[in-house]
Length: 387
Image 1 (cartoon, one colour):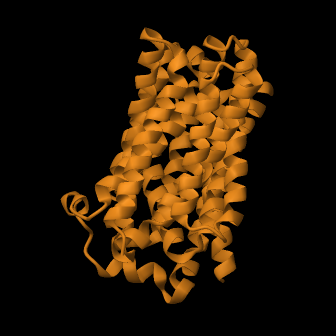
Image 2: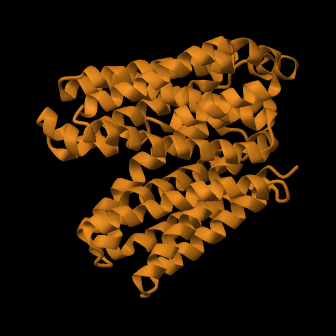
Image 3: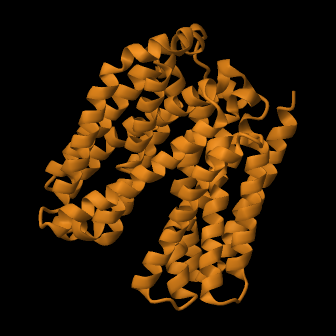
């Protein structure tokens, strides 16, 4: 039963990644089809992100009331319905409407699943599960590409992914008894006995502000690298645009391969050690990007940044119960997720302004600045929560 539930959780993490890169991969076709400017993708993305912030902040309350299994099934069902709605939308405003349940569904399931795994499974599973997220994020654009190349259009691409999500919702609904029997009812105990914490109470927990700052910075750094690596290579390094787009994928290769490797390394090293290792690799990668070396060195730098990012997200999440206690971990992970989504919303656009008004050459400097704040916040977290 334990292994069957773990298989369901792995499948759920693949599902989390499936829709995440659909909008970016399909938008060049979507905006022309809908007759809106290319820049309007940001509005859809912001609505989704705000939805995830709201639902992440409510994850403690929802999980204590419903349990992780029900939250996961309901949230994936909401995402499936939203993706199906995208596939039927004939206007930009229709997309904005369906973006609301899309974001609300994504935030709750992300926080609930991450907390459950942090409480019940070893750190290696957290790393491998987030590797599965990367697999899902890679499969989504591939499915969209198949739909576009076959002449079926972007709507059918969304339809295919929504059908996969609907199938997963059925599996999750059928698997609900597994959550109740796992670890002697562990899904019910910690999650339902205590009253949910308010946001003010969470902020007063020693280390909560530090972990939120660290997570904000990590996700800001990751999303900035995803969004601007190609532009940096093209605008500053002189790499042709179509080649730079492909090279930027090296970051994803680094982060996905790194998470697969991190699962084995966590058997020997603790979560704080893995986080420090990741921070060191990011610093090395960003420094390599900064130096006036051959383009091949810049590509190696992107891979190193991806490898460095690999252990940080899963290890910060997995260490949350150790830092704050199992009774508070769901609440803290919820605000961590909310701060993460704020980081992805605010910091990449800020570098866009720097790129426009100063220089794209500051890309590695920007990454190093965010890394410095993240490292300081994480070290402060360790001091505040040392037992």
